[in-house]
Image (cartoon, each protein chain N blue to C red):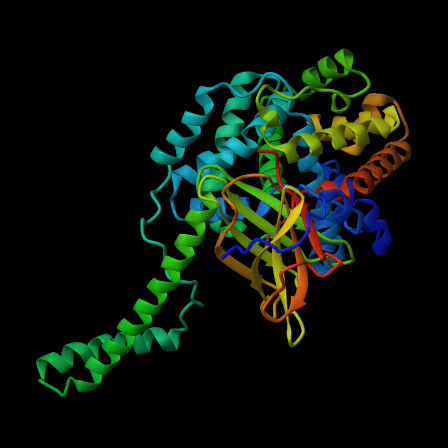
Length: 220
Length: 261
């Protein structure tokens, strides 16, 4: 029952002035929990909703890794199929649904590439085309900004990546998109292994520091 | 590499999949016995998810992919049962299995030998009560889920600061002018006090529902009506004397702006 407050109009600005709390629009990650719970019960509409939320980034990361649309399709299909099959099991995980889906997608995409032994060629092509690392750029697909929190996150990620020194970004990219180990990165870049390890660690630590407030909430 | 600090140095590389196979196996062994290491990796996986989001560049997924995802689970996967299973039960022990078989056998014997069925009737009646109770519980949950998954439901997150800050999510159904409030990490209000939700409409705090959290910090309040005439700019939560107040007592504990309509 709503009662109209018998008070003078306070004005939102004066109310906000009293706050010491930052405003936050983090993703409605508990919605993901609800969706996964429904997937576990066989509700295809919930899977469709999950796809609508994460299909874009999952497909994009699969495409970047595999370099082939047909492979990216397959990776996205398998990722959501696995999410459907294992939705119940995921309920016990403390991470976010986004982290889980990304892990599945990267793993499947990299497996696919390894299986087809195209890794070297793709890495060479990508490195030649973009030696500073493609994590530093990229544009949002049409319609992807429907969620306010999504665009804000993306902006923050972009800003954080821009703050990294290029060598750190490149090392992370070679691991993230090309599945190279630190030794392989060192070999490819003709750098000492210790240097590469330091770059990966320092770069990821810096990103973590900058992006921690924007993690997908792990839910409850 | 037995020093835990050294392992922590490798957590980022492990989460990226950038350790060699042997190093990765050794890391996993270390992780199995070091929960803080596993937590570190989990955090880097959250970071990986964010990096994927940034990578959402052109081209977008082909339009038919969505239908193919649904087709695949519709055809290739075993259909899940339509009815929600009862809450998870621990696996039966061998002794319980024997007891269950014995009970089943006793049912047959009871019928066959015309034994007194009074006790069985009581047992069935007890089970029926439990079943009804569980069904009612499931129906309530189903109703909550349906409320959250209504088309057009938007989420407003009310946040606070602190080491383990409380959080509140407001699932706002703009069409139905109702919200579902979900709080977590929220200490129950002290004796004689209550939490109160405020709808900030055109700059004015309109008092809404009072509520309290459970001992575990959770609260779920459904079917909260909000003004239908629009102008809702934000939601806020304060602690008030039991029974609620007409004007909010400062400071405001949690606050979140509503998404622009």
